[in-house]
Length: 261
Ligand SMILES: NC(=O)c1ccc[n+]([C@@H]2O[C@H](COP(=O)([O-])OP(=O)(O)OC[C@H]3O[C@@H](n4cnc5c(N)ncnc54)[C@H](O)[C@@H]3O)[C@@H](O)[C@H]2O)c1
Picture 1 (cartoon, rainbow, N blue to C red):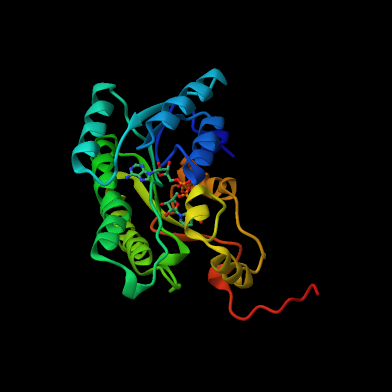
Picture 2 (cartoon, protein in one colour):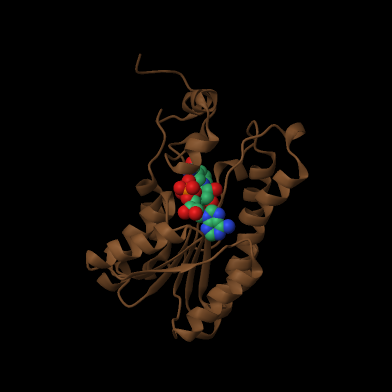
């Protein structure tokens, strides 16, 4: 077995949303297996702080400001990467925002905001980075959906539509980028303990989720990062176009009896 298939030395990974939650755990994981990581996030303060902190631990982690809902901001990021002569081997596109609001109360502003960050942001960012990957004929792109993109859930009209859109978009990318040796896979986390979930899940949402998760607990960002890492490895070269739940069994479950009691 070639050990090189399991390390990322010499590769550069761009992690959008890398200043918090799942993105931050992924930055930690990628840098610990040798990748040079660039955090792209709107949170300048955290981005700069984290970059310095990782550097003080001997890790290669930088920060570039980017608002993924803005074409100009993404284009500026692309120009910066070209100026730095950075080839990007890995894109982990995880930046996103949440909303739990009943369909009839969802305003057009709510809808547009969620779609512009979660779906249009995925379109713009994957396009910008794919253009940098194509000449090198190598790339690993991981996009971020959610179980809300697979299944209906109360209050997830805009959020679920945005995440369902990410799945459809990613499947097309997986086909169109295949000739350039670029794979595209999509993660569908369930309920994961992050800042986003603190804001999005009230007591009743937590109760409803826990009732339907076979593992009877929320997941942790590291558990999503570990799965994400797999898709970036050179050895996962034949894994393409998949939609991968990381949800304690939520997506596969029907009725759940409490066998332990
Ligand atoms: N936490 C969960 O249960 C869960 C479940 C399924 C999917 N997800 C998805 O995982 C991703 C990460 O979520 P998280 O839970 O780690 O949230 P989080 O709030 O902890 O982190 C999100 C990060 O994205 C950044 N961000 C937000 N808008 C941005 C923008 N316009 N441009 C650039 N950066 C921006 C934030 O500054 C933050 O650092 C999101 O796409 C979310 O929808 C989360």
